[in-house]
Length: 80
Image 1 (tube, rainbow, N blue to C red):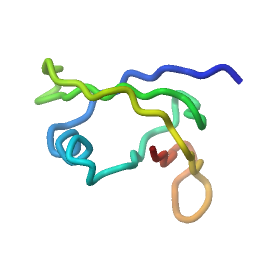
Image 2: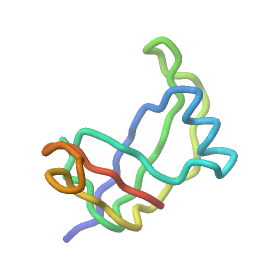
Image 3: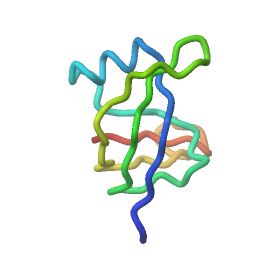
Image 4: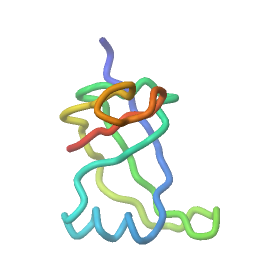
């Protein structure tokens, strides 16, 4: 499967935690069919407006698709 590139907004609290290396996962509605090895580009958002801050590209290493382990169908958790 071809590697996809996903541009996602991220609220400041979580953006900062990712930037510090404390948060290494995302829980998202899986409307983009996230897959292992896809690239994610996180952009900071404040009150619905993108700031000029973004993080280096992140490669997805694992995806847990919803419908199991208490995660609702249509959602996923991915890590890097």
